[in-house]
Length: 220
Ligand code: AMP
Ligand code: MN
Image (cartoon, helix red, strand yellow):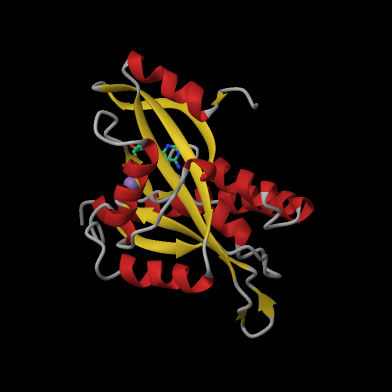
């Protein structure tokens, strides 16, 4: 097991020492659809734009005194995507210690699950999350699909990976892409290399944007 990683049982054994547990899940399906009628999309992987402007997976804190990890995750899914989905212990892939979220929550253990759905179910999740889900427009600003292809100009996965993610969501995504072979390892390596370049360009863009606000502040 990788360093810092815990099994589900080890993570639960930490309950006595004031840890809070949070569970998140990667929902995905196979698809035959193509971008521009020629680029295979291959898989639909759902992430979300969170209230804090970061990308993450659906899920959240579990009330350990009242519910199991999986029951808590399903409750969070109901709130965030508006569909009742069953995620089980068998779908648990990783648990690890994360920096706490506040002084009142100094210790956090994040659990990660992966669940494969039918394409139709994924589309249902997308519809419900933008309409009936309680958290829509509040904790969740919108669901997004992860592009797995790379366009000639370096768009797609490289750009997506250069965005900002909550906690270890980016490594959870990359790890899942590798483990489930949703992207070939060599393609993923190249995408990450391009992503670093995109990230550097974003930093330059931000400097330019900052200069704009400074110009606004000059006395006329
Ligand atoms: P949430 O209620 O979804 O914001 O999740 C509870 C806490 O878990 C958040 O305050 C984050 O700090 C943390 N968290 C959310 N998503 C992830 C993630 N993918 N990896 C690690 N920590 C996360
Ligand atoms: Mn959440």
